[in-house]
Image 1 (cartoon, rainbow, N blue to C red):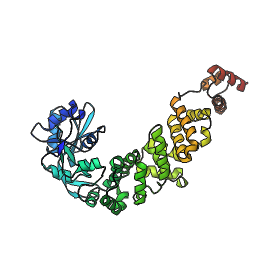
Image 2: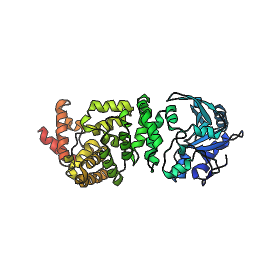
Image 3: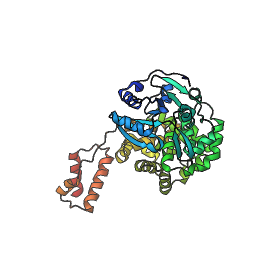
Image 4: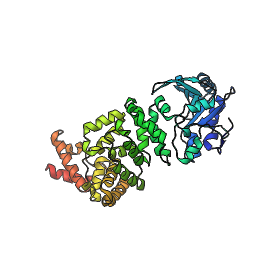
Length: 412
């Protein structure tokens, strides 16, 4: 096939790390081309983060060539033709051209090929099936470039076949639509998603988590989640996620202030009347959230921090001392999204306090009270708790000397 066009040479294409990998892979005459996200994002003038390379070199040979060139390698998926090369801490995912011979909805048996169109035909979306030579020549078998610039997320070939090969592609369709879609959603794709949505619970929690959190990180998340709810897709995975209007309001608040976070967005999306600590734990287990993500979600869904905590700057500082900057930002944004413009001024003031906050530490320790004759144990704990409450009520202004005077007064 003749090139479909030309892309301007990008800095990541000529970087020494990239050139070292390409030189190693082509040492025996094989071809190597960029593919996937790096090509897709470069064509849209977006930042490129990961560089994927397709090659006609078989995986074991590619591994040997990379090692011979002194490049660190990891056989991340060598059974399916994928190895990872690492140069100066920068990873490159390298996959041998292949075609599927058998699939089960989660994994595929592949055979290797030297046919670029066969490899493109097994990829998920047309925008991900565009190859780019090291000199910028583009090879586009399925009008992926046209779809990309038109904001169309379209499966390669038959949408139903692509989803049956790997059900995760159903979720990826919505995630990619959130990130790249500007046109109306592809009708064939939506029909296929509806037909096979019942297979979503078969996916591993780890794969679902990765796609859902990336989807929620998009500024278009609210519209796409609405679409997933309307098409009865999201109910297969997260029937609790119904508060799409609140999510839209939150995203608007975030865009004006500190930016979005997928766990915060997940928290506001969950139906509040159905949420308990146990319910949040079940959702976290279902999505295989990390411990950090689970704690953040649980804290926000079952939070004791009400709107009154944001009435005055000193009240906000009290919450900052007890819960930290991240939590105050989360709470201010969630209340703002739910309460509307009536809470906007309080939320903005709280976010300003959070930006300016410098963590403080209570000046006294147990040894200070022990020096005053208070024995270690419950009595000392009660004294310290009382003193800290007094110090907090004073907006953290009392010095160590003033705290010691107060301690003497209490002990006396």
